[in-house]
Length: 428
Ligand code: PSV
Ligand code: MN
Image 1 (cartoon, rainbow, N blue to C red):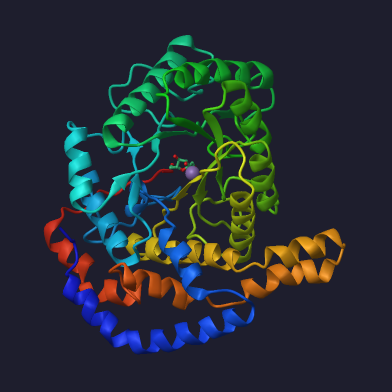
Image 2 (image 1 turned 90 degrees about the vertical axis):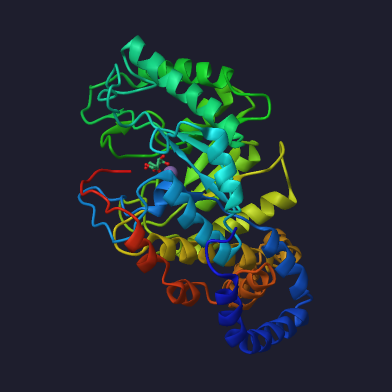
């Protein structure tokens, strides 16, 4: 079952294919001069994928207000449909990362079948102990896994274990744990004791992981807590992951660092110790973590992928990071933002594949700074769009994803069918 008409995509592609062939061939000749086979790069790009967040299908990610658009999804079923549109056009987002209890349903086997019928699978399951839910016995107002209240910690542990059980039914194999725990006042909590409580509770979640599962620890420097957070940075994250055990890895959300932090170096460090578990791709300018991937600092995204391609060539402890988009704001149609981000992410991966690693390493060893820099700069300036477009077209996706999406009038059609989203606000 396809959500968009295959004919619509084929007709749109027919209008673009001659220009694409010309651009692809020209780029192929350019790359061949540097000893690279464009088809081999295209095959690597075709095998690349990044998951989309169920919550990113809505326009909820803002601290202050929601500005819903007509036709926005209101539940996980409608969100899956929108994710299927993204996948059908981009062919690079075959999995959805669900968040509980936001995506709670009565029948998870049924949900898995529903997704499969739309051409989708499920990625990492995200737990939520940063919000209180209706009917919940204990509040997370003063913390969850690190709470001073034993019963609150137990409730947070239980929720995470429930997420694992749901994830097993959905075919996931990762549990991503981000807690909002932290403080707003010096002295509010003891740094050491709160981490001890977190580690003790997290180890109970860890103990419930099935054999082939991983627990991805996501750090965040601030927000909603603004003085300190329990898992604040990659240092706290890797120490916690090392203490928990081999199935615990670190997840890097690009928006969760202090300004100007060298994230690509963090990637290399985590990999060095076999603890790089996954990514949440987004972008940020000041203190946000929800802007579209590559919209502010595409060069940083490229440098991150340069480290990832390097890591792949030198794997440690089963290098297999889970890639996911984590963005949500209230300015664009989320499908368009996700299509644009998926393209930005994939193009950084493709550019990283173009790096002449032999030349880079030789320049590094010889302390030839300028040539080492140029080994990264040259591929960064190459427009890899024809490679991505060819990979998409060959897989049945759209050459021009945004134009084809608009031509489908998907959102306008859904506006006739879906009930309006309620107003409200809050960080999601
Ligand atoms: C927290 O800011 C975060 O990045 C975590 O990944 C959450 O699960 C997600 O955003 C949605 O709130
Ligand atoms: Mn995140």
